[in-house]
Amino acid sequence: MRSRFLLLPVAALTVMQPAQAAVYLSVEQAQALMFPGATLTKDFRTLTKDQIAAIEKAAGVGVRGNTLQVWSASTGGWFIVDQVIGKHDYIPFALALDAEGAVMSIEILEYRESYGGQVREPAWRA
Image (cartoon, rainbow, N blue to C red):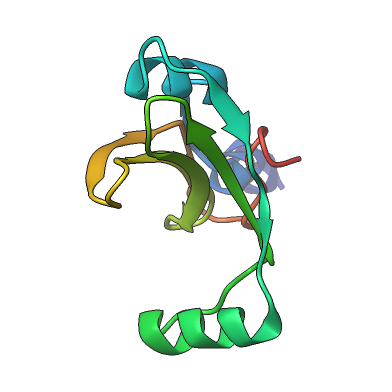
């Protein structure tokens, strides 16, 4: 009878899932860091079914949504926010492109990983 009670704390420990989380930059902080002094204008784009199909074919991965979160910079270039799937959660990132489309900078906005569990939307997307 006593061994049953001793196993209860051990069972509780196995149910706990360790997690790790860090918010590095907000979207606004990333914009200021990647385009200092520039004015950014929201220019969200909606992809067509044909564009989504072309991206999926070229990238070999599925497109989750049809809206691109994009801002144009007054100094030229583009600021884009998107996310990639980590082990269990999405990892939002910001991408800065110059006027010719070359990558200027990439910044991780948030990192959250739980070891087990479901994939969650990042806070900025909700």
